[in-house]
Length: 152
Image 1 (tube, rainbow, N blue to C red):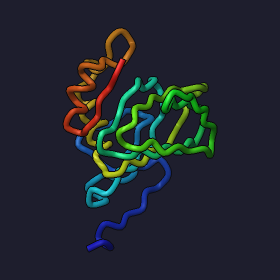
Image 2 (image 1 turned 120 degrees about the vertical axis):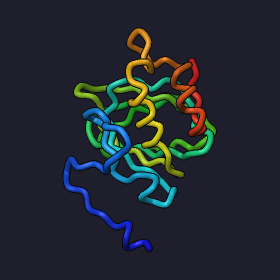
Image 3 (image 1 turned 135 degrees about the horizontal axis):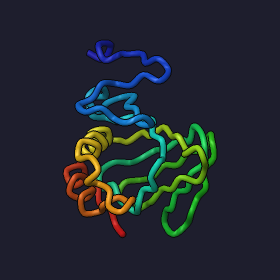
Image 4 (image 1 turned 60 degrees about the vertical axis):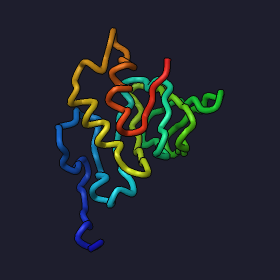
């Protein structure tokens, strides 16, 4: 019943998950909370996200603090607080932090599953990084079940 899924989060509060996420990552609505329709996360963009594509999920990013850049279809877009972007599934894109402190964003993915990928990624630990950069082979191995693919 929908009213049984109702919840309120206080500032800084997160939904519990399978694995603890580091500071800067907070799940606000899990895929299981929304019957699979979407996932909502608050993220701090500490690491640049290389070009990738979501084969199934649309991604909506709203900048809360700081600045970030989004590469989409050959154009770089600079986003400042209050700006947002819709990244449709099937189209490669990349994201970079463009401020200090790093940009903080609200991210909505539909359908859900994004928080499960993030948990899998952090559960894998430092193996998803190589020489200070994301290890694309490892990310692709983790992301395959979520319809995500990373590029050089």
